Image 1: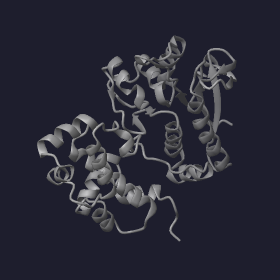
Image 2: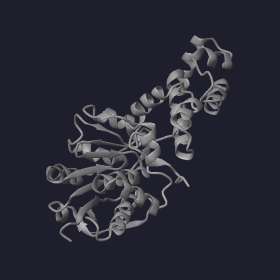
Image 3: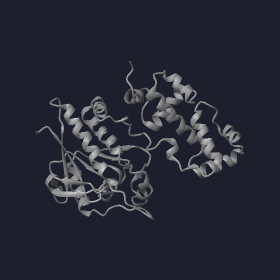
Image 4: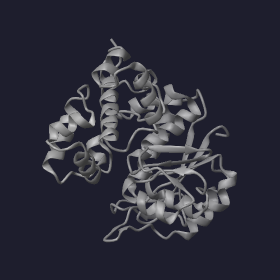
Length: 330
């Protein structure tokens, strides 16, 4: 038992249940699949006081330890979130006891991670100042406004900045936990855990929280809605601003203005997002050479495809395919 890493998941009334049970299932499966081959995990559910904690769904989770009891033995600490939706936007829970515990214990823990709006707890403890972080898309704007010393990126599934890891909302906590397992035991074991849990895909940290259509507001203008569908269906077509303007029966200047107003992106940025998503799907499902993927998805050259993937996903197309191919060849 001395080689077992202790994972402490802090819980509190109102916690999002999947922020707790999703990562816990990943660590549990990782331990079972390791057997005696390596250091597994011991999961502790800790709260200010032992006993049942009511989650956001009404389902109760039992804390088997107090925060004080596990502070000295924790290897990895995970802070789940709780999204409170109000007319004025998200409202974080006031958990001063958890914040104090985190601030005192963080220097002694190997790493600390947050799921969803658990990032508020890290920020309140001062651990995110000067760092990059992410959180649930719904809370990202509020989070950035409250903590200007934090560089908030609302797009990635998760971000690692030194010993601090933050993830997007709810199910992204499982992607985060798999990344932590990969950090401890290698990529292959994390893939084995993902298959064991019948997860659709272990997404890379740089992957967007949404597919392209879900990542932008629904356009009010019918011509823009039709144009987005046309872009998605034809990634290899001429998607330059002049071609899009002609398709939408608008002047180039008017299209650029309306497109930015209704989607929050320039036409060129949206097209690049859409082509990256098309390439990801191609790499996940097909075995065609990278040259074919670049041509079919509108990148023009392999060099452009590689450069765009590195910038947006932090991986080459070949690396992405090796890690996230959905079916094994043969």
